Image (tube, rainbow, N blue to C red; front, top):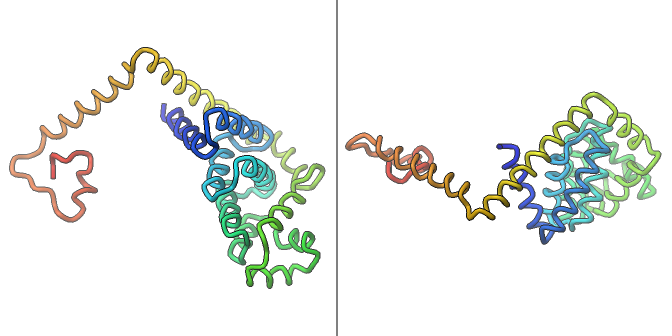
Length: 239
């Protein structure tokens, strides 16, 4: 249930970023395909893409970029979520500074070497340009494209990684997450068609528990002023 609820929230967020249910469904299907081709779950891929969309990257661009990052992360063992956040920040600024490139380097990505190829210069010059904020998002994207194009070392490693036991375990996890999400979605549709008895019952249980919480308040109890909302935020009746 917890996994299904998380997938429901993720899909709603994607709907907000992509502009509608159909767009979100199409985007998620691509995330499933990317997950199937790399040792990541569809949820991990979608979450990284959602982070990039939050920085203003358009849906189709986010899909293309997260596919590159998934391939690179497969080969380097890097954190896909952190990579997505880093690339999103670079896109938002339209330039990459030293700290941005170092975050990629710390994930095992030879970003300075690849940028040197793209920009036709030395790695030392790339470092100097990054310090001045003169490395653009387009150049970083081009470097990632070169690293992940068909036949590249990174693409080959990703393909081999996808055949590992670990990757198959991730595929099973992804299938379970998709199943859980579809189950919750189906229950929601059924509940709505029946007039909301499931949601209504859940709301009644929450209300009942809150009432019981209030009933056990000790006589004369006064919640401490410091941290009162944090300690007793479940119910106003203890404050």
